[in-house]
Length: 187
Image 1 (cartoon, rainbow, N blue to C red):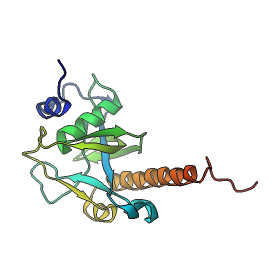
Image 2 (image 1 turned 90 degrees about the horizontal axis):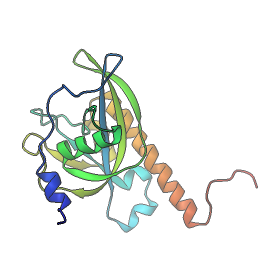
Image 3 (image 1 turned 90 degrees about the vertical axis):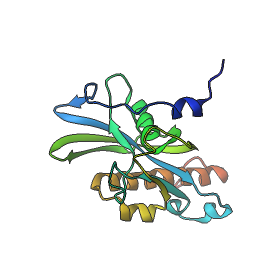
């Protein structure tokens, strides 16, 4: 019997509790994704890379006006990438493809030291129902809008890393379209 992924994913409960959290030298290990999708437009090939896509932001629990990217604790029974995919599905209700790593940031949440690892996630599906839909809002927006509403410095840096990632992909695609594999300065 084949199981429908959408039904399986949406029926999961969000994980809770700190008993399986990873720590490294006293720093809680946090993993997340910056979900993005390309805009549906014939004009996107002529746009700057950051204008050709939009990102998904969510509200933290009970603070609906603040916006951030989905992230949470990396647990001992999963890989870093699996944790990023899980947290993004639980908090934002999207699934997709992780494309490398954006970076690692050290920050404090309250007075607790954390180390955050963020990934770019090209969204393949937005779920109608997800584990934290009752406590979080999600919203697609431009990179410019996200820069304004995202208040955490390290998430702003992750957003800029995503812009660099997408720009690099777009440039590689343009070079490939004209038959070049990489830019050459001298022949």
